[in-house]
Image (cartoon, rainbow, N blue to C red; front, top):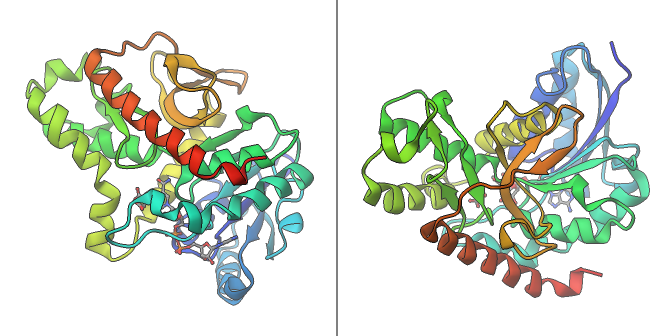
Length: 328
Ligand code: NAD
Ligand code: LMR
């Protein structure tokens, strides 16, 4: 067994938390030889429910679960964290867009960014899941003085997985055959699931699915609206698939990306692809053998894609401007 690592998770008593904690504790994310300390952060009123989750974690007797610290105190919660998974925040209800949550949730991420900077390991990586996740990640990153911006991420992997599943169903193939699927921009109804560069079994999607009208229309809108469709059907926002995507994101960031492929996650833009510097935008990312990551360069952007990317980036710039009071 290796030395334990520490994973801090906010919103640990929530729906996503319930689908996330057990897989992390089981070794499914960091490996069967990697013990994990879980620091579980909740607001005071949710601590009794969190106690129940802790009892259940105890009852799993996972070999890789080293310790559990349930807390409402941010300093204790982020102490020595190697990873901070920021899930805790209010989900949207039917009829709301994700950026309706900007005012409700934005404030949570100032204090959490500060607490991460003050208490976590300097190498701590932070993945924001709580919506609107791109701009919440921007707020956390901007308030985490001294923490490198390349250690902050916002989750668009659920969108990538959704897009792969839609393309696979249309083509009549298994979803594992779909690669090179990049989500550009915001985790919102403006996101652009880029079918123009995606591949099925190594062939361009546009050669396998020749119904361009479907690709430009129904495919994109289905992916953009999938969160809303789940809220309508379930009466609650996606939770198991969101937890799964958070796990996929971490796994993709700690393991080298297969040759020629990429994965989607929102990172602090360095200006690549003309995306305004400093905003948290999803783009094609590769993880290198040494554990660093980089934006995949040279992905072709045609006029159709450019229009879609411009729209989602404009929304992110608007969200950033709307929370400027939370950004020091
Ligand atoms: P939930 O309401 O079931 O759970 C949220 C939990 O967060 C609650 O237990 C609540 O007590 C806790 N919480 C609230 N404020 C907190 C704070 N300041 N500190 C710590 N904990 C806090 O919601 P859920 O279904 O688990 O969803 C959580 C978030 O994830 C929502 O914002 C949702 O919109 C978002 N989400 C994002 C994606 C994505 O793809 N990025 C996908 C699904 C859901
Ligand atoms: C999702 O995409 O399922 C989540 O972001 C929840 C939502 O509000 O859509």
